[in-house]
Amino acid sequence: MSEEKVVDIESMSSKEALGYFLPKVDEDARKAKKEGRLVCWSASVAPPEFCTAMDIAIVYPETHAAGIGARHGAPAMLEVAENKGYNQDICSYCRVNMGYLECLLQEAKTGEKPDVLKNSPASPIPLPDLILTCNNICNTLLKWYENIAKELNIPLITIDVPFNHTYPVTKHAKQYIVGEFKHAIKQLEEICGRPFDYDKFFEVQKQTQRSIAAWNKIASFLTYKPSPLNGFDLFNFMGLAVAARSLNYSEITFNKLVKELEAKVAAKKWAFGDNEKTRVTWEGIAVWIALGHTFKELKGKGALMTGSAYPGMWDVSYEPGNLESMAEAYTRTYINCCLEQRGAVLEKVVKDGQCDGLIMHQNRSCKNMSLLNDEGGKRVQKNLGVPYVIFDGDQTDPRNFSEAQFDTRVEALCEAMDEKKATEGGNH
Image (cartoon, rainbow, N blue to C red; front, side, top):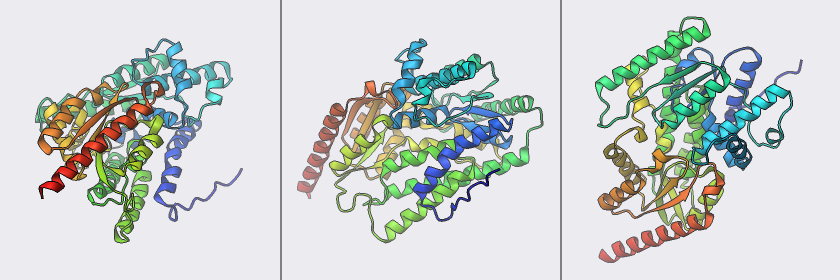
C-alpha cells in the first residue's frame, strides 16, 4: 500500500492552497463513495452545516458546472443535455450538470466511459445518494434538483425559504425556516439511520463562521484606494466559500490571502500598480467561459473591479447555536429580497468600493440575477451619479456571449467615467 504524500499546507501561498483544497472537496466525495459513506449534491446557498455534521460528503453542481465552463468544456455537456430535451433557455449550470449526469449514468450502465466524459476537463465527481436544495436563489434549482432525485430515485431534502417582500426579515419568516431546518434534520436522521449529532453541528456552525469572517475580511480590502485586491480574484476564491465554508479548507486559505493582502498594503503594492485609473462594480455572475477576456479588457483600460454583490451572497454570518439567526443568514441573500433592499445592497457595494462605474451582466442563464439590472443601474445612477452599462452574456454557455459587444460596452463605460471625472475636475 503506497504511503499518502505529505502536503506542506503551512508553506503554501493562498493561490496554492486554493489549487489544493478546491479539488480536494471532490476528492473527499470520491473517497467517501469508495468507503460506503453518503454523498450529497447540494445547491450553492443551501446550508451545508446539516450534512457536514452527519459526515456526509458534499458536491456542488453549480460550482462543478462553473469549473467545466472556465476550462472550456461546457459545449460538449450542453449538447448532451440538449439532445436529451433540455431547452437552451434553461440555466446553463443546470444543462451542464444534467449533461454530466447523463454521462455518469451511461458509464454506470455500460461500464464504459463515454467519449464526452473522457475528453472533458471536468473534475470527476460520484453520483449522489441524496440531494439538498434551497430556493433562496431561484426556483430553477428546485426543478433541477427534483429532476436529479427522480432520475436517480434518491431522497430529496428541500429547504423552503420565503421571498422577503419587506426588509428586515420578519420574525415569522425566520420561525418558518427554523421549522424547515428541523424537518431537514429529521429527514437526515431517517436517511442516515442514526440521531443527528447536535454537538458536531455546533462545532460545524462555529467553523462556518470562522470561514465567513475571513471571507468578509478579504472583501474589505476592496475599500482601499488604490486597492491591493483585484475583485476578479474573489470570483476564483469564491469556489471555497461555496464548496467548503463548513470545512477548515476555506478558513486556512482565506486567512493566507488576508495576510498576503495586509503585506501588500504595508508595502504599497497595488493590484494594478500605478495604472488604477477607474474603479468599477461588477453586477452579476462571472462569465466563467470568458473570465480571462473580461478581466483583461477592463485591465487594459485601467478599470479595476472593486465591487460585486455576487461574492457577498456567501456572507452567511450568524450566531452559532441560534437557529433563528442561521435562518436569517440563509434567507437574506440579496436576490431573495425586494427591489428596495436589493438596490440598497448594490448602492452600498458601489460606495464601499469607491466605484466610478457599474457594469451589469444580463445573464441569459440567470433571470433572477438579471431581471432588475436596469432598475438597479438607474437607481445607482440617480442616487450616486455613477454611470452604468449592461452587456449580454452567460455564465457557462459561450453561444450567448460576444467578446465584441462586451468590449464596446466597456469602452462606453470608460468614456462615461472619464467624462464624469473631467467634469468634476473642471468644477473644482
